Length: 349
Image 1: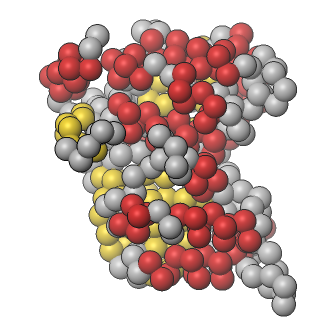
Image 2: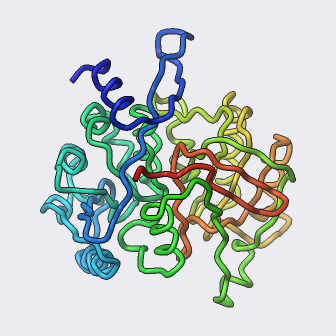
Image 3: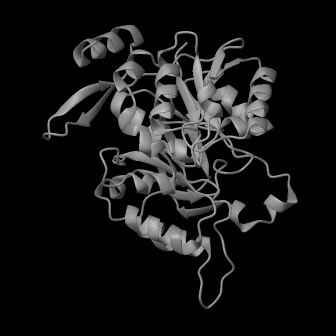
């Protein structure tokens, strides 16, 4: 199906909102449809894929058990059990698995079993026309940042930065997975988790603080800081203009966070973002010494000069309490109150 027919089909059948993107050959914008996947219901079939690192069989079976207890059916191919070095399979096989999951009419949504690394290697192998013609929810975080943002950029399909299969066995994570994907509402607050574990409550990486006060509104984009910066200078670079940018990372020393945030601050569109929302950057803080900065000092130093609403410590990232944030959905953000609210449903009825 041609791009023209695909656009008309999406606009007619899905009744979606219109986005405007820049063409790669000039400054004239062309219309692109925001596509919302259908909402999930009990009994739906969720396809499991491992588009990056290999997954242990016990973790795969844990994901299957969790999903089935939530009322879903599951499906996966033998590709997910492969092992090609640190990847779950070759680039070609991982891309084929994802393409086939989108094309399979018996699959209602796709959940990445784990992250790791490898998604940027297959971005050029995905069938974006087929994805646009067979829209369904794709969920994951960490390395999956590359997939959900690129698919949204190329097709308009809303993706979901949320738990992967092996991390979905958490009450808070499941609650927002269900709220966002199964219970569409015109407005929905994303409330931060109540920290009950003393190890979290006393850990500076979980502290919530305002970087720059203010309120903002825009579409949500973002995910892993490492992946967001890795795509800078490639055809898959994110456009941050007028967006609410959410970021998180794991096990990155303050100097590495400094380097990545410095790189981001040199991107023209990042300077035009409406707001910046940090999740919990687990394993990224260090004690203050004469030879080191804390994570908070780095974030304040790099982000506060941008003078846009910004906050740290929201409930998403490489932590048990990982909310589900839809890419491309309009949201409002109050940095002083540390509040985020979706302003439209992320899935269609």
